[in-house]
Image 1: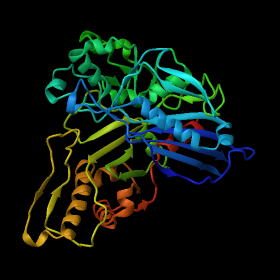
Image 2: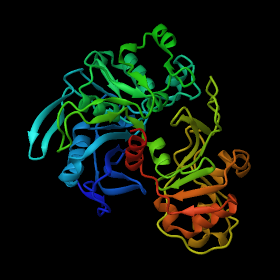
Image 3: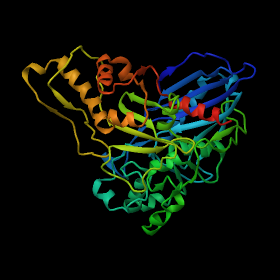
Length: 451
């Protein structure tokens, strides 16, 4: 495994009057741990470390449509991150916040999900009696299969890769697999359950909503709908509010003391937004390997009770009972951009489709011989990315929501001047760049603010 980021310490946790919290993000391709210090002047990231997981695993049951990861490898990467952080600072951690990739599901046996062992830095745990993580990218649930499932009483449409959809798939295609386990959750729920030795998993409303069949208004699963269709409802975790405490650590862990409080696991999307959104009038635009444009909803907003499968936007539970509205597009980004003021070439960059419109694949139109230079293609691609975002969440929508500025983040924006030009053309707000989102930092700050 290879380190892809490690920050230099800015302020030691040993400074009198400071409070240390540890944030962990279990992402799709990497794991990150960040120490955050709370002082009278604000929060400072003292040190962070990330590791690529490279945890891709075969999916015998689903074949090429499956997308699974080896939980053992993910936990190895997490252990490597914590070993790399200063022991004297880990010993002063008072709270741990954990976020991770949403929608996916991992199964385990209660009280047998891991084995704790002693190491040079205290205790560590290794997964046992745990399935692969079936990720949010999993494609085993076809459109016809999803249409055969009960209609959820939720504001979010069901999609392949959602935890409940995956459980339904196993129920109908490999029921014996489900009989091997009695607990389920996201990968971050699993880690929290292991750290606190929970009898049953506890899930935040953020992660529950990402599974499908969850009513965000009542904060409850669609139990009756699921039971009537034979769904194994005993696998549904209990649900709590984000920012709440799941429990205390049952062992010391890499020097972090036994009894340290661990928060209920959070969604990486929400924590990323939380790490940089400072005002309710901010919109957060993040463009890297994917793109998201996110705004907070007004106080008192309630999402609809039924899903709109054709809607280009989705509402996600945030913090303190609030919601955020997100629009996303998946695309490959270019490494550099050449100056080209305009072009007649038109590129629709949705090579992976959209969750609300999977059939909308990429296309190139208005092709002429004079518009095929690298500059024209680059400009058209950048225009297409931003136009696609704008089509889902127009400037007028942001204005009506009270947005006054956009916080731009992500490697694509920081490296591509042409992309930044297109953002400023399409969204005539003040744009502040360099506000990079960081789910691990966001998870730590959530716990720092809720001490």
